[in-house]
Image 1 (cartoon, rainbow, N blue to C red):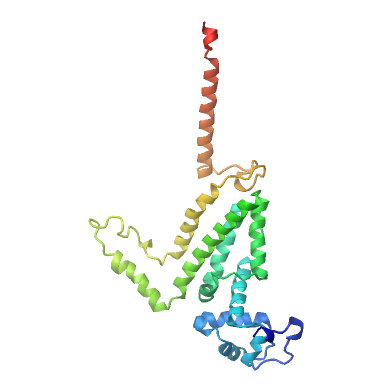
Image 2: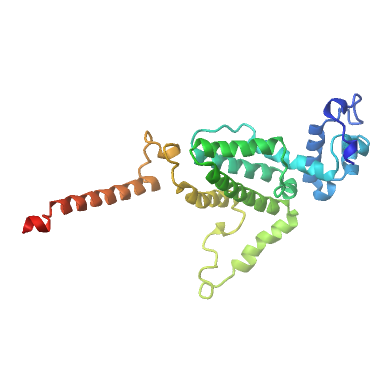
Length: 283
């Protein structure tokens, strides 16, 4: 089917479809996203897409080689939507966290498409721009290329994993979601404290319906190791820049106090040691 794809300047349909629109790659992608969102992965067929567009199904092949080519375009579209409006701030940790949250929101908005797209590598414009942006943030922070690449892969895997997990839950039929939610009360909510002291729900938010709070907690917990990554040599950045002070009571302030006490004790020890006369002097 590859030979059917027509170059962009030659593929424009001059007449509107039955729906009164002129076909384009973007229109086909947006229509496919809507179909998948309404009817699931089985809706991603050329026949159903042609019917939704009001065009002959074969017209789709002027824009995409096959349905997998269209699926990669959907995956790239979700990446593009996640990036829309993002700008780096110069704080690499905050920038990566914002990108991760944007990926999560984009997948939550299109959970059915996210299940089809999360594990794919598109190699297309939006994905390439996202890779460039993330690596650019890390390189601007001063990480050498090998380390930047390692952090990139760890960050993307973590972000896509969170996003795909929550998208999978949202993609369930409403009855299945309600049944899963009820299990938390039917099974765990009835556990006896004397036999299951740790599994018994200690709080109503044990139920997964508190999704927003769980998402915030998840990112907070998983970002603590990122905050402990060493600062690249010679490149002050983010909350550790010399012209910024940690907020009183924050973990950074507590850490600074501990370091200060340790250094002071160390300096005191060295000072005391320097006042002790050497064996030669004592003799």
